[in-house]
Length: 515
Ligand code: CA
Image (cartoon, rainbow, N blue to C red; front, side):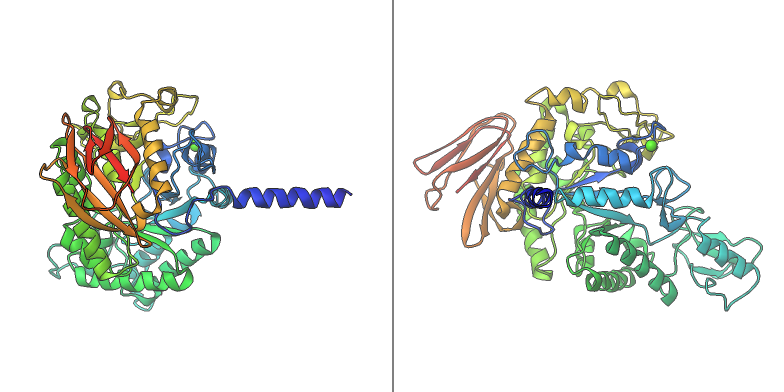
């Protein structure tokens, strides 16, 4: 009898896991959430965010219930670097096989992966392959080998070096102690650059990826992707084509996204095997901010449809990766004034897009943070504002005035139905309800007013109309009687919309989905 009860219980548990997120399609077209790990949530009262802190906050991110009103509904996490490192940001790795003790242990990472997967949330790690820490064992061995002129040493060629009289302009070089040689150090003397022509280095960095993929990690964000061969795009592109092809042999659906912080045309050159962030959309001068602030739907819709076509012409499997800001940029709540409700419209233009958009932690509650007079990136990475008893603190070096955080904590915003947090939850839910938004083919539909525009999205032989009114004040209309659209399915924004006699009318700062 006991056995039968156990069996029934097990079956019930298995069934409930499977039906957690019935509407989620298991591909990479996901809303992703970037966590700057040390600033997110602290589980052990030392003031530093950590892996168990993230586990404690998973219900906030995705509680596994697609109808939940209490959860953001994101479907993937990007963790900024978690490997052992001397810096607070950890972009200089000492040991790729050790979790930094400030953040937790390998067991904690394993647990985080399992908890995420049970909610159909994927986890991608930040892979820093351009450089390591100066106290990485590889660099210590490299330096020793050079000091001893041990040219046959396994590590002698692990980093890029030159004789100190050799002229290689454009790149930065730092002395290798007690030798007449210098190592490449474009970012900092503390960040020596790996020699990716060395077959042993290539094997090492593949082994690292394999280790984490075998463990259950779903993919990687690649740091400084255009700098792996400084000033030499062709070699850098060849490198990434090789690396990602190898990763796909290990895990065919590996999630990849690279930081190629550059012009649209240069980013496109990198997109063969891997996805790249759409820097054109992001930041204070990006297309989303421009369209929101200037009420210009035209430039936005033209960019999205043209860029999607360019990507699909190159490789049908690559995705657009829209975002508003990240840990290297001033926060969007600074350049998009809450007073004007700009973050609301920006959420539509960020999340009602093809591909896999990223939210920078805290963007959903309009956290502020900018480099400011102190010129420090720490100000862009301030502690998440939970408003409860979380002990997470701002990173070292932060000078950003906490009094400027006027948009409310998570706790405060949860109580306010009209908060930006609850708005993000709604927009993500709409996005997830219509798989064509992420996956369909976008064709531009423009009106005679630059503030009103959108797309006809084709997906599975069906057409969907997505329209944005970016005007701050005006109700705008467009005649859609030549199309076969019947009904407004969703109104997402600060006002209303109606469809009458083939004419659709949308209030200011509002988007609609029509079928
Ligand atoms: Ca901690």
